[in-house]
Amino acid sequence: MSSPASNRPGRTYTARTFPVTPPIYQSTTFELDDRAYEDIQGTGGLHETWYSRFSNPTVQAAADAIAQLEHAEHGMMTASGMAAIATSLMTLLRTGDTVVASRQVYGDTDDLLERDLPRLGVEVVRVDAWDTEAWTRAIAEHQPAVVYGETLSNPQLRLLDIPPVAETAHAVGASLIIDNTFATPRCARPLELGADVVINSATKFLGGHSDVVAGVVCVNGTPLHEEIQRRMITFGGCLDPHAAYLVWRGVQTFPVRLQEACRSAAAIADIMVDEPGVAAVVYPGRDDHPDAKDVVPQVMPDEHGAMVTLVLEGGDERALQVIRRLEVATEATSLGGVETLASLPFNSSHFNMTPEARLEAHILPGMLRLSIGLEGEDRIVADLRQALDAVDG
Ligand SMILES: Cc1ncc(COP(=O)(O)O)c(C=O)c1O
View 1 (cartoon, protein in one colour):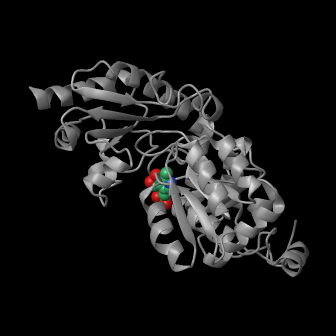
View 2 (view 1 turned 120 degrees about the horizontal axis):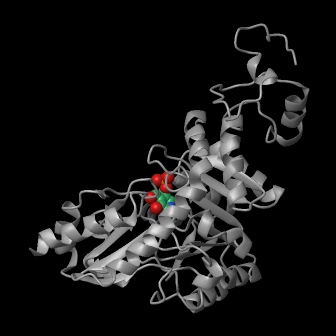
View 3 (view 1 turned 45 degrees about the horizontal axis):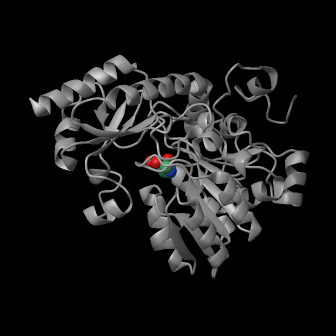
């Protein structure tokens, strides 16, 4: 392929070679050809690569890889998980609309729902993620335009029963948006269960190495894809090609990382449940999980994620002493990396809630959240034991 400028050094490689990994197309703009020109005239430039805020080959490589995992027709990368959430909500909502949303959502999503949407004239109604009857009642009563929840709530690790909530939402003409970050597309595929829009913070398990902030929106159907893509373009929350390359690379090992992390998490949950000083263990793969009987087999049927929540005896004060003594796990917010991260909701993800509000949201004193990495269950269990012993001894 030649073009008027193709004799510029470096310009000919992409047309002549077939690299095994996607090149990082660090180019803001692309030479206009007839196809791009036609697309700009016809759709506003949604389908051709001509300017990187609209589309970039490296960014699209990451989007396609994740869409494949979510069994989606289309994926769109965004600058962060929050950009994916905000762009999707703003696409589907108008002034005067109502959102029925889970009470248990990520903190900044909660801010968006409670502070920003009401300012724009959107009413927000909240229900507990796991209370399917409450979803049905609220959706019937409020006739929302959007229903919003997370597959797996943080830190309670309760499941949202997606199929009946999707059915009720669709019966009133609402779109169901699901944040699948905690469950991951390896363990749950919300689009197949009836969701219309699936979001992931690719910062977490998809990127997988705690080295990139990114988000992704997955949908089926061209009209919805184009609607959201247009907002991504006008709101400007596009992903940078370097970051997209890191996400793409992370996704290549996602299945094996997750398989091992889920296996390790299940083993750790089973061991820690008998540990002195541990009041309870919450893991969706255990028979004593409150959703084990009805919801887990539908929503997360095979593997049950890499998140484990321990409820330590002695409340938040003792949990803080324990977490500070961990040597293998690192006390840090976020999740989904190859390293085990530990955090306490009371001083990180849910610090801005009163103890009473936390209790009301089923966040118990002494809850310690673990994002299980690849160190192996023996090392992680030994680490937890030595930290518990150090505090009690
Ligand atoms: C469930 C969930 N959704 C969304 C986000 C936001 O993702 P990001 O930090 O990539 O914007 C987070 C971040 O922790 C999260 O835990």
